[in-house]
Image 1 (cartoon, rainbow, N blue to C red):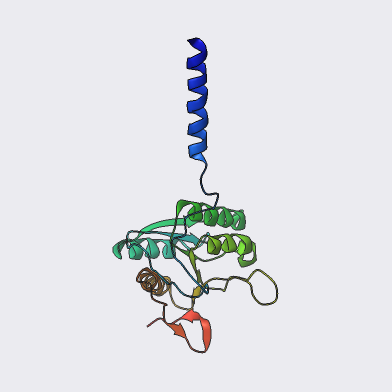
Image 2 (image 1 turned 45 degrees about the vertical axis):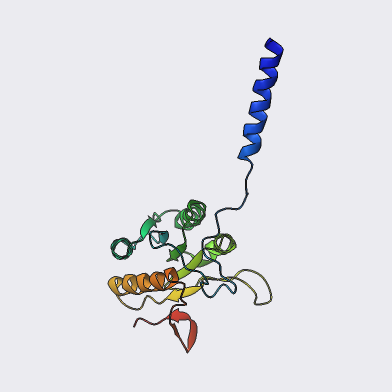
Length: 190
């Protein structure tokens, strides 16, 4: 009798562990993007929108948090510390991808430090919007991956936040945000 109980417990444990085996991707694919420059399907308005900012972006963080919340999204805003900002931003992007963020707004402290994690975000189907400077592409032969869109930071923080929220709203609807015809990776502030 004791042997039957032990076998039953072992079998139940094996089945439980086998049930835990799932996909090994970093995050679910929230947005299908066929060319990494447009959102084909959109996403739920209550979606998590990741925001990764440099240490001196407190006003921008507040503007994005308020604007995204008012638009019905669930912002997850991460501001890197002054010391170790690049590593903190890499970790934040990775965590937001695993959390299932549908889009990432990124103002990189050191853009070149984010190359690999931006690729991971794209692989997971996350749309990446660069705030300010462009993010570098990875890969060779000009086929690398960079941010899907770019919001220039020439204006004040309130303007940048408002434009970024408009971009996210367009993506949420499954629309490609308006771009400046003279430079394909910037969005109009209109």
